[in-house]
Amino acid sequence: MWRLRVWFQDVSGTRSYTGAWLRSPNETAIFAFVEALRGLSDAQITHVDISRRYPYTSQVPAGRDRGIGMFVQGAYNPDNPGVIADAFPMWVPESEVPAIRDLWGYPITARGFVSRAGYNMDEVLPQDGEPQSLDNEYPDDSDDYYLIAIRRNFWHKLLRDARAYNTLSFTLPDAQARRVRLDIRDLFRGVPMQEILQRLDTIIQLLQGGSANIDEVEYLLMQLIEALGAP
Amino acid sequence: MALVPDPVYTVTYTFLDETGSKATTQAYIRQGLVIQDVIARATALAAALGAVSNAQITGYTISRSWTEDAPAGAGAGSRVERKGRTIWLADNYKTRIDIPSVAPAQILSDGALNRNSVQFLALRAVLLTDFLGDFTDSRGVSLDALAAAYESYVRTTPRRQPTRKLA
Image (cartoon, rainbow over all chains, first blue to last red; front, top):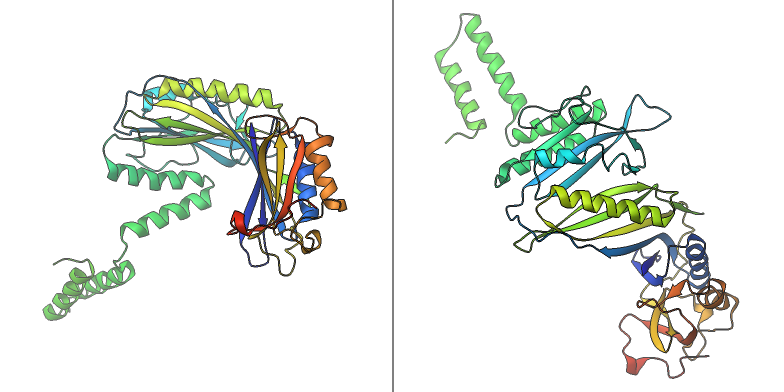
């Protein structure tokens, strides 16, 4: 059975929902039910959702170390096909790169799957574009699709690749660049980089000018060491 | 003021590894397809995912949502904790549908809902006659009668419910 939920919000901002069971996701019936509730309640209706779970029987699980295969694929608005409008990321638990490569082309794109925003994904074939392992570098606009391999049992890699995954969520160049900048900032979190660069500039100027005062250089270097968190 | 559909059906797959840990992944299918096509595509992808993962796929959930684009705003004094509780029968089994923040005008002085109001008759028609067989209980049995309709609060215990539950 399909579970229908109608969400309400009262004047205090508190939310609640009411549910009903449906034999099929009949949109006309759903809207009629919502309108009937609207007449009976003085709270506002904010959204409606419907879902159904289908049990599925597959193989006995054989993995346990939680490796994750993942791909991210560009999606295009038909009205503006030259620009990536959205990205489709998909995680597959207990998988790896050679296996998940089989998902390209079929059935993700060939069977009408789309990105979260509803945009079409291009039919991408294996070996098309340049798969990127994020071990190496951030992807750029020249890549048709991206492959992220999260190594098994390396949680620091998971975190690092998760950060890069966020980068991939913003495939537009501006957003991508901003994400990279934020990542770099994260790497140096707690270290006043601007201050360090200014002090290095000062040291270089002193040395180049030939008027370096040893005490002054030493003082600046000690400040740098302190800023970098050395013991 | 209208319910605007999400552009996609969301399909959420549930995985289980041999330690018992669970994980999910999602895919999206465009709107506009008949539901049988959506189910067929979700099933096909389940098979493909099963082939590339060592985990077990225990099932998938297909969901769809609509968002109110211009909510009218909640009425003054509305509180979702105040429910209009309606009990419906499906082949003598009971199923409940609550109405959050039921409008005070729908409540009679003894705590029962006015089941003869235009608004309540509309709800009754939707559930029992206008879409015959569409609305069911959790077992899939069609709703066929109204058993009770009364005001109730979140913490109302059975002993504190209105004496007369059906106006």
